Each structure stands twice: as C-alpha cells, then as structure tokens.
Image (cartoon, rainbow, N blue to C red; front, side, top):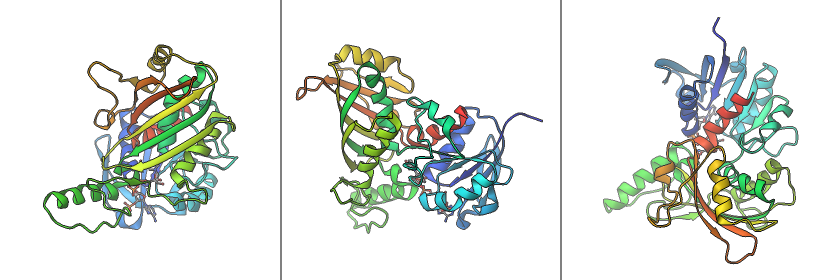
Length: 332
Ligand SMILES: NC(=O)c1ccc[n+]([C@@H]2O[C@H](COP(=O)([O-])OP(=O)(O)OC[C@H]3O[C@@H](n4cnc5c(N)ncnc54)[C@H](OP(=O)(O)O)[C@@H]3O)[C@@H](O)[C@H]2O)c1
C-alpha cells in the first residue's frame, strides 16, 4: 500500500480551505486519502484534488475516524466543537482559528521561527494569526542578529483575510461604486470600496482591537519571550489578497541596514524586494499566490538609535494560513 497520511480538511470550501487543497497538491504532501468537510450547505459539492473530483461531506463528530491529520479552517466555534472528537479519533488537529492559540497545552507554530515546539503537542497544534506569521517570518532573522525588544507594526489587511464573502463584497461594492450605484454592505461593518477602516474585530477594554492584541500575545508565545513589547495598529484596506505590514523594531544593539538585508536574504520563507533606485518594494500584487513573504524598505529608524524600519507583504491565505498549516503537517 502507498505510504502516506489520511488527511481531513474542515472548511474545505472556504478561502483558506481551497488554498489548503492546492498547497497539499503543489507541495506533494503524501496524502493517502483526503476527506473534504464543510457545512450542510456544501454537501455534495465537488472539489478537485490531483485531477480527481471529491465530494464535500458534512463536518460531524464522526468525520475523523481513520484520519491521521485534520486541517481545520472552519471558524473558531467549529474548532472548539470538534476538537475532542478529532483527538479521540487519533488525528492531529492543525487549527487555523483563534480557538486554542493561547492555550498553554497547545503549541503555536511558525515553522521558520519555532519548529521545535511541534514536538510538545498533545493532539492539537495552532496556526498563528495571519498578521503574526507574516510579521515574525521577517522579524526572526533580525532577532537572531540582536534580540528584538520592541515592535511597532501597522497592518494593511486585505479582504481575503475576512474570508471568501468579504472578497465578494469588495468586488461587488467596487463595481457598484464605479457604476454610480449604492451598495448595501453586509459582510464588513463599513463601506469598503475606495475606503479603509480600523480592523473589523471587536475593540477590547484597552482600546486595541482583538486583531492587534493577537499580535501582542502570539508574538510573545512564539518567540518564547514575554518581555517583547508590541504596539499594533490593524487596518482593513481595499486590496483583495495579501496583507502588508510596516514594521519598526528596536533591538538590543544597532544592526546596520546592510547587515539586516544580508540576514533577511538568507532567511527561509523570505524574499528581499528592496530597489531604492527604482522605488520598487513589496506589494500585494507581487506576493499574491507566493509562498515567500516579501521584505524590503529596510531603513534606519530615525527616532531610535537601535531601531530598524521595514515593509513586508505576504499572501495571508498561503503563508498566513494554508501553507503554514501544511508546513506544520510536514514537520509532523
Ligand atoms: N482568510 C484568512 O486569511 C485566514 C487566515 C488565517 C486564519 N483564518 C481562519 O480560518 C478560518 C476560515 O477562514 P476563511 O477565510 O477560509 O473563511 P470562509 O471563506 O468564510 O470559509 C469558511 C469555511 O468554514 C465552513 N463552515 C462554516 N460554518 C460551518 C459549519 N457550521 N459547519 C461546518 N463548516 C462550516 C464553510 O463551509 P460552507 O462553504 O459550507 O459554508 C467554509 O468551508 C477562520 O477560523 C479564520 O479565522 C483565515
């Protein structure tokens, strides 16, 4: 019998789920069998994997019998509801939602940053928030040169980070705007075409929204350093795919721009795009559908003696979600 793993994908019809199928196929992950799971609404829908049409089944407690790996991207409530059944069936759950990220028993893993944490899993491994993954892939090589003590990050987050329906809302509202028609938005809380707004997650007691606080807490957990201070501002911008982030790091010692660029160029999961003459730096249209996070605009922080400023773009459906999850499965 062919070697490989029995893999279930919960949320297979979603923005992240469809990228999971493509990533498993593209990276030649040894899939022995694939079970596609979604809500009742999608039962019977067919999705293609390795040229074969597979039917979507309803996600239930019995979905995980005989499975080795369960990739979850069906929302945090589904992850919480089906985690016990998944683990009981003997499958390792790799979860894209926020359900277990801060659970002390659950490793939170970016393979380029803390691959060793995978070994501590007790049945569940969490994928960090997309903005945290993209941030840390770029920050880790700098941290290895000299410890990062403080991060100030502003995000420019695309529609696809809010799922397939948000992408549709951006396209439809833009078409309506250009046709001079009114559009009643229903997925995101504000008009999206030719606008931008503070991230649509709930605002917490300290004034930061949940997306911003995820970057604070998850960074500390992944970097194993509770002393790292993070100040984040998350903004939703009318871009279909790929998140961008303006990052400023303060380090223990001054790292020069040249030293930083050399380290970033060698680091896994990164591609340096830094052409000052041509004014060419990371852009979402260049990071779309790419595994690497693009990094550039590396400059001295003029406001801090040991600071550096940089700009990154990453496909959050891939490195921020599906690819990171498949890389975790590869580590297993
Ligand atoms: N988008 C991103 O960039 C990103 C990045 C990191 C993490 N995530 C996380 O990944 C998860 C999915 O995000 P997404 O962007 O892919 O969302 P999405 O495009 O809205 O897809 C949601 C998926 O969940 C399924 N689902 C919804 N309700 C369900 C239910 N009651 N039972 C079973 N399946 C159900 C949907 O199935 P139907 O098609 O049948 O409704 C669909 O497959 C979320 O937890 C999100 O936070 C997303």
